[in-house]
Image (cartoon, rainbow over all chains, first blue to last red; front, side, top):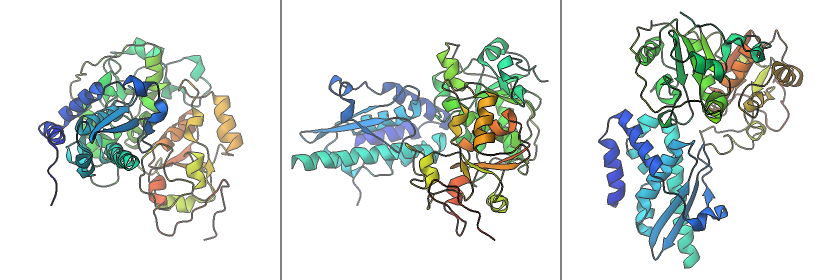
Length: 146
Length: 299
């Protein structure tokens, strides 16, 4: 039995799947432009952020679990819009979910949102790695509090 | 119809200065009849954030590769692609891209497989163009479709397959990956995704010359004298030698292929695009680890 995908993730997937291939790139670019700046407390402490080594461009990710609500922060350079777009999807897709909901997100979610052909399977691995790291950090935060 | 060359004296020491154009030349020639500018990047969205006015995008992942077989598109596929991009067979094509023209050089090499005659690189690539404040636009480039002929791809001269590399052992091989990959400490470039090679190391006898050594800090190619020092003196490549370059999937070695072929004038140089993702997973091919090139085993 599989958990239903949280609605904010399902919405992202459905938005991409509703578009023709070239328009999916445009939507990814919109996500890229929407990646929020880091909150000041992290902007001044880049050491708290974890580098996603699997990504081709420098991208850093940090997860907070606040009263069982997950918050995701990420940063990636403007010269790497695809990576920024991936990070933005992860942030918008996971932020506000419960820790259990995040851990239940299928590891292959990035391959299911219709971007594989538009950006290539090789590139989509960067988003898969971000999702895996976000989940691992959720586990670490929970363990640290237990 | 081809466009005249950039006769900037800083290119004149290269074996084939006509293969490079500078940013100043390109900006002055934008919009010329018979000149098509092509952007080819690692990041598939970078073009959409702003590109050289009039440039078309060619993505190597999604457009130059066959979608099913691990190979490039065939003659019909290439003709269809270039016709859609509005490139004619006798057009001068100037390619530029991110990361020191890494992917631009790859695209240039693929264009060469199809014998497109006049294809050049923008020295310094996208980054130098942007850094020097030259114009960018997000306006969609509309070029009328052309009727690019179906030309058979010629792999023999500039592309090496695994068996060619086996037969070549003992002649100069250049491994253009990072020292960590060469020594066998990892199978992918630092900070790059795992691409599925089962063994780490290098092809025995290959010399390690990381591709980016050919580029100066501003992304332009190093001078002829500097390149001679790296490839002739240090790596020991003689002018008459047949050379094969490889990396992980053949993209970084396209950059080195360009340097050896067009800047140093090496006549016989091939790119092994199967590279480490093939060699490092192939059964019973020899592999060396550590910092030394290693010996070609007697066969």
